[in-house]
Every structure is written in structure tokens, then in C-alpha cells.
Image (cartoon, rainbow, N blue to C red):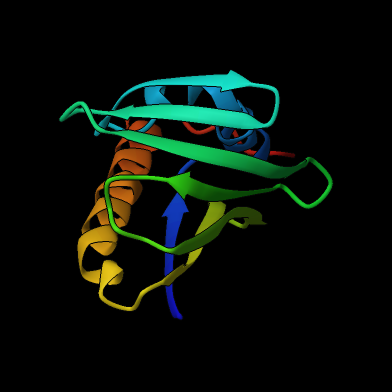
Length: 136
């Protein structure tokens, strides 16, 4: 199994970031390579810009921990196993966003990691373009 962990510092307070991250059905509004996303129960279907689809099982959306846990169950990325979490932590200057993904086989990481890098850049751009609202 391979673990990929990306951490970015966002210029927004934790509740502002959480509102977007916890909008499970609206993730395509945040990540550029997703053309669409729809939530039915605990299943999220994301349409990739190239027309491929990801089918995900949303395991947990925990407001107390500011964590979303999900697993990709079907994809064009040749993964036999995938589980990921998006976790937020308030910092002095904004919010730390950590995205951790465990996947198999190891070779799938070469295809998946660039997508995760793009998604993190999209998140960073999204909040850099907005005024900061910090908790008092």
C-alpha cells in the first residue's frame, strides 16, 4: 500500500473551508478536473473532465473533527484499494488542510498523485482569491 499526504496552508478560517469541504455533493465546484459531482445517500459520483467517472463511498463527515473520510470504489485509475481523508486544523494564519490517501497497487500512485496535486492547487487558488475571515 502507498500513502500520499498533501498539506496546504489556506488563507481562510476553518469554518469557511469546512463549509466547502463538507459540501460532499458540491466537490466539483472546488476541484477543477471534476466536471460534475452528485451525491445519492452515501455514494458520490464524480465526472472527470475527460468523461471518466469516480464512484466514491462517503464513510464519514465529522464536523467536530473537521474531517471527511471517503473511499473510491470504481475509477478508471486501476486502483484495487483507495481510502482518503481531508482534515482541517485552524492555524494562526488560516487553516491547515491535510489530504491523506492510501491506495493499492503501488503503481497507481504515479497516476493518482498528480491529480491530488492539481486538486490541492485548486483549493489553494480558491481561498487565496477570497478575503480572509479569521476567528476572533
